[in-house]
Structures are given as C-alpha cells and as structure tokens.
Image (cartoon, rainbow, N blue to C red; front, top):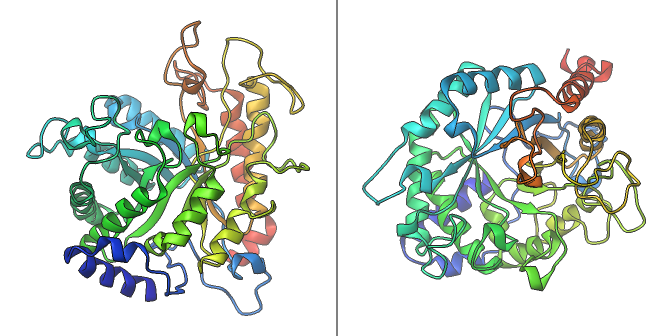
Length: 411
C-alpha cells in the first residue's frame, strides 16, 4: 500500500515537472506488492522458514518463456503453435517485446496496436500471462545522437515514452496485462546506445512508472532486465551489481515491485558453485550480491525475476559438451538440455527468485556459416524441430510442480 501511495505522489510530481526531485526519493521503506493474480511477492506466513536474506517471504516458483520480438511477426499458425508448445512446457508467463518502434514506427499520430493485440489474444486463449518488455524507440522520437543507429537508442523525451507506456497500459489492462518490464538491459551499450547511464535510466523509470500506474493502479512493474556482465569500459558495459547499486542510491528502485536479471552461466550449470562466483551466485551468494544491494537501499525482500537465461547451440566452431570445456562460445544440444533442467533446480533453490524465464523458444535463423550465436538459443530449431532441451525443461518443470511437499501445501 505504501508503494501505491508513493506512486500517486510520484504521479503528481511528474505532472508538476519535478522529475529530478522524485528520482532522489529514498525515505520510504515499502514492502513489495503482489500482482493482482497472485504471482510475485507472496505474503509471509507465520512461522515461515523462508530465507532471512529474502525478507522472510514464501513463494512458489513460476516459469516463463522469453520470446524477444518474435511473436509479433509470426503467422497465425506459427503463433498458435508457439502457444501450444508453451502450454505443453508448463510455463505460465510469456515475455514479449512491446516495441514502441513497432507500434508507432513512422509518426506520433500512427498506432499499429493490432500487431500486439493478436499476441495478447493468443496468450489469453491459452491461459497464459504476458509480460511485455516496453522498450525501443522509433527514429522520430529517439535521441538525435543515435536515432539513425538502432532502435535501442533511448528516447529524446522521457515524457513521450511514458505516454506511450500509459496508452499501452490503458489498452491492455482490460485484456489482463498488469505486469510490465521497463526497457531491457540498460546497463550495456547494445541496449542503451548512448552508453549505460544509471541516472538517465532512473529518470526514464521515474517518468514511466507513474504513467503506467495512472492507467492501471494495480500494475506490477519490473526493472529493465540487467545484463549479467563485468564492468568493461571499452565495451561500455556496467556490471549488474554496480548499476543496481547506483539505481538504489538514486532512489529509483522505489518505482518498481521487482527487479529483472539475466544470469547466463553456460557452459557451467546454473547450480555450479565456484570460488569466484557465477552469475547465478551473484543473486545471493557472492560478495555484494543483488539481494544484499537491495537490502542496503531499503528493498529487503524485493523479488527477483530471471527474465532471461539459457544457452545457445550452434553448428559453427567448437561447442562445449561438458561444463569444464574451455575456449567455447556455445554448447552442444546435449549440454543445453542439461542446463535447461538444472535451471529449474538452481532457481528453485534461491528464495528471492519468483519467476524464471528460458530464452528462447525458437532459433531465429537456420544454422549456417553466416548465422550468429545469438540466433540459436531456442528450445527448437528454426524449422520447428525440438532440441533435447525442450523435453528436458518440460520434465524439470513438471517434476518441480509435482513434488510431494508442494502438493501438500496446495491441499
């Protein structure tokens, strides 16, 4: 309730032009809210043995598929097949790009909502929840320093982006969409073309969050998924821990109900324990981990959504077939299946994780000498054939859901 009240205050401040002041709000220690459908942060039961580092929350791990920008462009038959496969896998959530550039590609007066309507309609028909990643800028609205370069160029005017987000919330809340992720991987240059800037992202967040809630007061908001990287100035990467801490210092975490994180570990299994720490261990085990950073800035117990994790298969070059392989950039289908299964086990062992999404559903190109590693994270090949990881993930999800102790809780 406190966070809802803060959202209302922020809305008034934004409308009054006091965005900069709102970014630095740090005085409200509010618990994470629960999405209306019960997913996300769950109330703590008396006598709970949930992790103290996680604020004492109990939770039931949920599962999702991260599709990127693929569903929007599928044929009706392809879209129906994707929904059928998601149901068969046992996932509940679909993470899909809702690109501003896709809806308003050419002018501020143009709206092509029908492109995303069909995705939401298809998901609802299969009883699936949609997590739109609202992001990406049409050229006419982009920062002039990178407008001609990429759709990941940030907006020139945060207010325009926020208004688009408000309209999206207004349109899709009646269709059952109440959970939103604001941008994707803002801590690396490939997805924030002017170079990662926590202050600038915080300003975008602070303008956009109240705009969404003005249309849907019950909206559940996620931080833009943080890429799990080291700080590398030459590549304009800022580490997930450094970026999160800076957002906390700015007070921007008060705008969201959960954070989003992308812990790719391949060729290691997600459950692997190491001396230096893996990207999964960065959640709650390494020095200055994400859970500790959240607690430091007054967000003890804030849920973490793993909105991307996975491993690419590829026909080019040497592929890792064991977790000890060196000098590889991708994995064999056999090891991808092992990673998919272990992802469920690893996520279930971390109390702060509420939802884990596998990236991705389908390879976006045939395997060839000219295809890229990034195109081959799918559970299925480009032609629809299933990789071993499809059945491995399905079986792991089912095994988790059918654990006797979970069934006892449900009864």
